[in-house]
Length: 127
Image 1: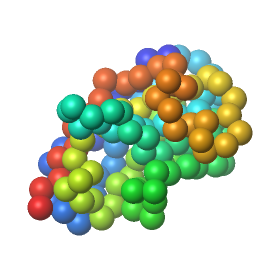
Image 2 (image 1 turned 180 degrees about the horizontal axis):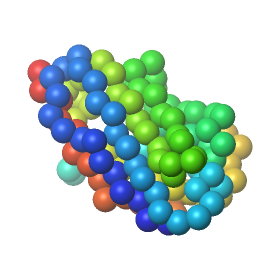
Image 3 (image 1 turned 30 degrees about the vertical axis):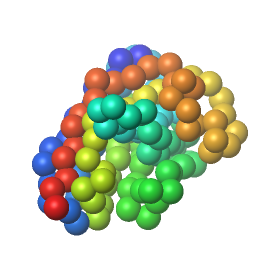
Image 4 (image 1 turned 135 degrees about the horizontal axis):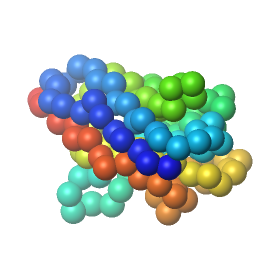
């Protein structure tokens, strides 16, 4: 599976962005998908995840109520809609795919649980 993230950019605080992650390969719906973010010098941080069917979603507490993860399996694409952006949301955002079957939110959080990663797209939120 190859992942290509896009949609990052510069936005003012309070604004919105939508990130996309296009996947190549077969059986996209068999992969759980996650979004992570990373600020230089810090660890990669879990943002959100969605199950293969799209029926269940999980979020970090810091983005719950502001971000929405979704997927379109017909288009092999996962999205992250980011609303009410804050300067502390500034980071490089990565999408990731996992072929493992998970049963709880905690399974989706560690980056090591993911098998494939996109290249990252930069989100900068100005105050």
